Image 1 (cartoon, rainbow, N blue to C red):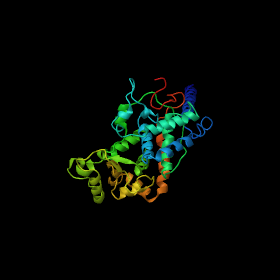
Image 2: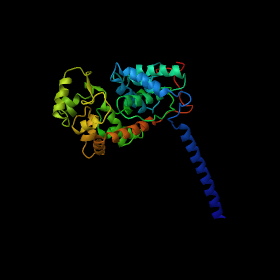
Image 3: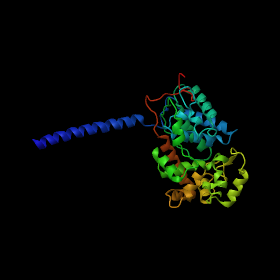
Length: 336
């Protein structure tokens, strides 16, 4: 009897396990994003997004880099849910006022313009979170970088997480180990880290986020020894020791508005602007060094990895199904 009893128990356990597994698979299938999510409800959404960004680029060459940064800073806090776009209110502490974002993130007006255009075509259908993902892809593609099929179907959050924004977003002042940990915490690996850092192939940074490297690195009273000396002299002219910390400097001194792999050859030449950039190459024994070398030697390899890493980042904890909402105004929750 004992063996038969064991067999019955084992069979029940197997059925239960199979049921749980099936339920998990069904949940995953329901939550999965899809490149064809708006195929019938808003088939021209990608074109609408791209057209607005093309228009914005005519008067603001920085906007492409600014828009991809919004997607990045959104996804690292509670997932890709457009929480970053919410203004402050009596119930919301806006992520816009968090340390990594205040006086730094920009392009919110362009996001609003995109939302207006999308609403005019397909009212109440496309989320602000998906608009950020589509805007990031268009910004890269329009700047000469790769294009990819953006997975869609995210919904918008009902709240923000200012505290999370202060702690979860990688900082330009952090060392490689800390930044690697922050990427790992959201399910991104070392290749994702290096590939996504390559977005610094365009855009600008304020002097205040790297001036410590020019004059008093790690409280030594000296510049960062990994900085190319000619590049150091150039940066000291742009950012004098007692100057305004808000002066803008090209992240890529060679092709500042083009999306290419020059970022990685800059690192090889010790011309990474931010500490977090240069450490990818200058940290002895780091797994990132060989990836930098690979991307520096092959723009194709970089573009392929970047596209995949953007998809990976876009998959961080999206709200789907009946979670969250589709905001009619990206700056505030519906009904507020």
